[in-house]
Amino acid sequence: MKTIVEVEAIFHCSLERAFKTPILGDATQFLTGYGPVPAVVKFTDDSTWGQPGGRRIPQSAQNWVSKGGAVGVDEIYAREENKYWKWGVAEFRQWSMGFTEFQGELFFEEISDNAVKVRWVYTLYSNSLLAYPFHWFFGNVFWKGQMRGAIREMKRYAESGEGFAYE
Image (cartoon, rainbow, N blue to C red; front, side, top):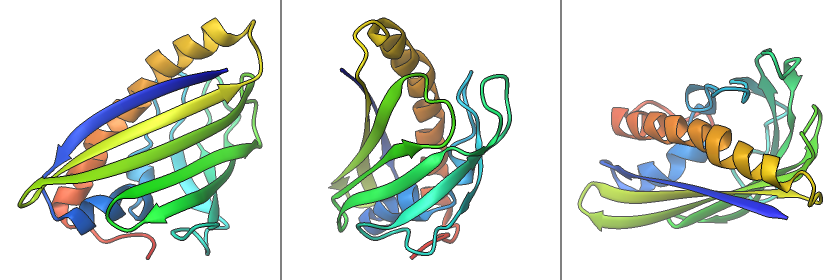
């Protein structure tokens, strides 16, 4: 079973900066939590992050659903320069509510000088037909809420000229 969630925004910056910001920027500024989704407060074991096969471990804040600490292992599956990113979390280290994998994709389209359409799609996977209504609700309310806030912060970051955390 899968739940697909999508958000979009127009970033007013170069295509290269829009492309690099979501994955190579300081994601602790984007992933600030929403409802039961905890904020990401830091990343560890991230020396290979930014290239296909690169990994990192997001560390979450504690909240009423999360004990805090390592969430799972992020891995980059694909990087097509200035066009596309694909990554996922399949090795969960905290309670995953029955989800088996989260896969994120980012698509970039230059629509004019200094205007880039960014489309962010997350696919949340599970093997439980019984839990699917809950998973659909979680994805479309809480995960999408997290994504809406995150893409606003990515846009702000991209347009600000702040440095990247990774190369």
